[in-house]
Length: 284
Image (cartoon, rainbow, N blue to C red; front, side, top):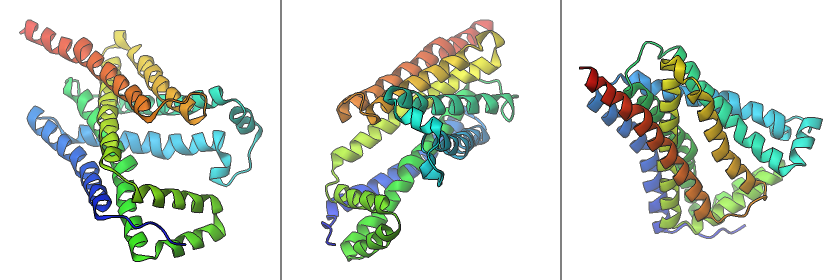
């Protein structure tokens, strides 16, 4: 099968995206820790939190419950029940990241970071969590897209798709879709990804601040379930879109991420981080 060639402009944008998504997050973490004299291990703890609670625990367990066929299992009664109810499906899809990722932050602040009480630790953890997510969710896929684009232009991508189609027709269909997207890739697509990740990292940083203060001050422990609720709400909206319950435009969906990131980050910054800083100055 012939695929449309991926032009030099598209290839350049893919390379630029891969560089941005793989290099900018660690650069931001390095600059932050140097400027604030923070331990880089606080950032690493955030990255490990994402890997352990989101990738290793959350996704497989969510797949077993909602998408058992993806795990090589037969569809059980619970999956049939959930998948027959779009709103419930969206809620479950939103609840898993909300519970697992925010609980991951809680565990990190209660264990490996329990002796770090300075307010910058919450920000460092959020930068590590959100930054590593950028590298996993976009950095690595962009590198894969560059590989696919190279195979398309070399005329070998069709052979790969044919081999995949013989074993997994659904994955082959995804390959066709990716090839079409790469040939039509624009600067707008890249900008949309960049904007989404900026505000997603802001959300994670704000959520980390919420859970940090929930762990540092027992009187503020309710900030932890608040973080779970906010995280669940954001992903629930995305789940409604995926389930076809809502039909928001891509721009409107990005607006949800933008508003969520702004609200959570600046809410945590002004009501907790900055207030804490001002209280410290007054105590001197």
